Amino acid sequence: MIFDYDTLKLIWWLFVGVLLIGFALTDGFDLGVGILLPFLGRSDNERRVIINAVGPTWEGNQTWLITAGGAIFAAWPTVYAAAFSGFYVALLLVLFALFFRPVGFDYRSKLVNPLWRSAWDWALFVGGFVPALVFGIAFGNLLQGVPFHYDDTLRSTYTGDFFDLLNPFALLVGVVSVAMLVMHGAIYLQLRTEGVIYQRAQRAARRAGVLLMASFAVAGVWVAIGIDGFRVVTMPAADATPSILNKTVVLASGAWLDNYALYPWMLMAPLLGFAGAVVALRLSAAHRAGKALVSSGFAIAGVILTAGFSMFPFILPSVTDPRSSLTVWDATSSHLTLSWMFFATVFFLPLIILYTSWVYRVMGGKVTEKTIQEKQHSLY
Image (cartoon, rainbow, N blue to C red):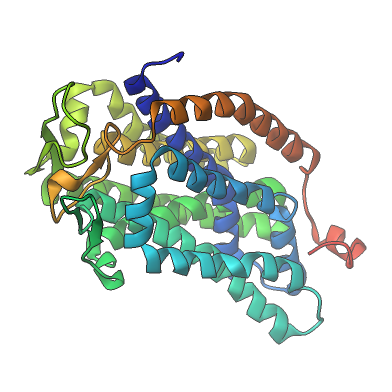
C-alpha cells in the first residue's frame, strides 16, 4: 500500500470535500439560475435566454452530486447508511425537486402557451430552491448533532423526524446556502448575458451577496456561543478491537472552535468566505464577471471548508448518544477499498476536470434574445 490506513482516511475526507465543493461550484450556479429564473426574466424570450445560459452544461454539472454520493457510499458506508436513513424524507424531497429540472428544460418550450411555460418556469425555480435550501438545512443539523444511535450490535436507530430538521439554526444555514448559490448564479448570468438581464443579475448578485455575508456571520456567532459542539475525549487503543462505540465523546460549549485554536491556519476558511464574497461583489459591480465568478467560487469554498474544519474529525455527530458519532477515523471502508478508490480518483478526476474545462470553453459566449429568435427550435 502506498499510504498507511490513517493517511488514507484523511485523504478521503479531503476528496469528499473536493467533490462537495466541485458540486457547489458547478451545479451551484445552475441551481442559483433556476431560483432567479421567474424573477429576472420578464418576457418569454428573456426567460429562454436565462435557461439557455446554463443549458449546455447543467447535465454534466449535476454528475458532481452523483459522484459525491457514490464516494460517500464507498468511502464512508456507515455514514451513508445512517445519514440516508435519518434524512430519508429530506433526500426524497430533494430528489423529487430535481426531477423538475430535466423535464422542465426539455419540455418548457415545446408548447407556445404562456400558462404552460410559466408553470415550468416555477418548476425550475423549485428544482433550484429546494435542493439549495435542504442541503443547507442538512449541514445545519450536522453542526447540532443528529438524533441517532447504535446498539451493541451496531444497528443504527434514528429517533427524529422530518420536522425536527426545520429548526431555527438549520433554517439559518439554509439561508446561507440559498444566498450563496443565488449570488453565484447571478454572477454567472452576468458572464453569459447582456442588456437588461445582465443589469438585473448584477443587482441580484449584490443583494444575495450581502445576505450571504450577514447570515454567515450570524451563523458563526451562533455556533460559537449558542450551540454545543462535539469533542473526542478518548479514542480506543491501537490494539483494541475496532468499534464505532469504542470511544468517548462529549458535548461542550465552543467545541466546534477547538480546531481553530489547534490549527490557526484553518481560520483562512471563514476569512476566504467573507473576502471571496466582498471581492466578487466589487468585481461584479465593476463589470468583470469572469473574475467575479472565480471570487464567488472562493467564497463558496470558504463557506464549505468552514463547516468541514469546524466539525473535523466528525462526519455525522450523534446528539442522542455522542459515542455513536461517526468520525473520519471509525466510519471508513477498509484499507484496500480506500487504496483502490484513491488510485481510481487520481487517474479519473484530472480527466474529468480537463473535460469539464474544455466543455465550458467550447460552450462559452453570450446568450442573447437575438440568439433565441434565430434558433427558436434548437434551443431550450
